Image 1 (spheres, one colour):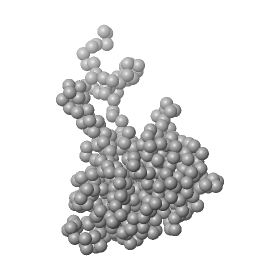
Image 2: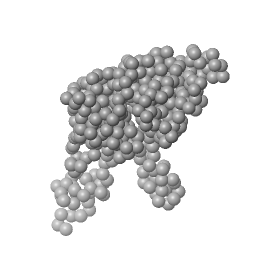
Image 3: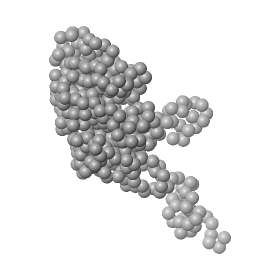
Image 4: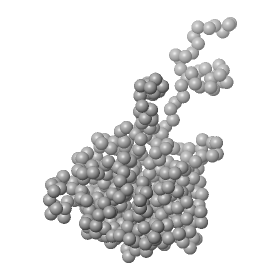
Length: 401
């Protein structure tokens, strides 16, 4: 670290190198924080969480009990031990609460005054954070598995929605109506994700074992269908048989730069794809346990070198190196299956939610203080000297002096 600081000060290195090195060190030191709790509000499993990108301060959670909670992650107590308080809740007593399990919650990317939730009660609701009342409610024919707003869109305000119907619905926030349908899947759509690089590119995953990439401006169908065997993409007839996994595909996640797409399936495999060409990079992550019948929310780090993937795996969160597939560690702390996890890029922290109704905070281990910087040894005097490293003890002075 001192080498990075010296090189940065001398202008030999880009400051980004220091930032990436420290971010990577912090991710590699993630541990369950015994000093930080998150208010336990949900009476049933937690399906989804989301941290807003504006301040990085507020976190949404949605549970199998239909309840939505907003937490404040900041510590203003001045104490090491603190609890992330629930600042507001859409509970069972609210007339606007979802009747059944909340499957996805997401903040509006540009303003914490609005968030969107979708549920098995066949609705997607756009909420006013201030009043905790729905500003808009979209009704669907089947259960809603997932939805997603583009994190970068400036030219559209579309929400992609996946339901039990194989057709992907595109809902417009401005008009409050469903304006477009994407056809191509043959079973329920379990996950949808907009590209963080190109605002019109959308990836969708389905129970038909397929992952399709769309340009929503085109009316002629998907750009391509991912093929785990990297078949000939020039043959249109092969599109019908291309599969990304040998089971249901229930997880999608773009890397922060949008250059790669990660998919997860019930064949206990995770695959990394080139998002521009649809090529399978053939990274081997080994067996990644996935028994979920619904959407699996996993996440990728941002600002590290190399980048890391955080995937719910049974009652643990598995951490893999993105481009090599190496299993770095298993974050263990939940008492039941983990259903979702979210990476906080500002502090290199991970939050995970599971069927044990808990949200756990995984934070980097603090650096041990250097002996020279320990202020306590001046106060403790001789009593504290025994705790000092023997290499720094005074072995020359006599007691008479």
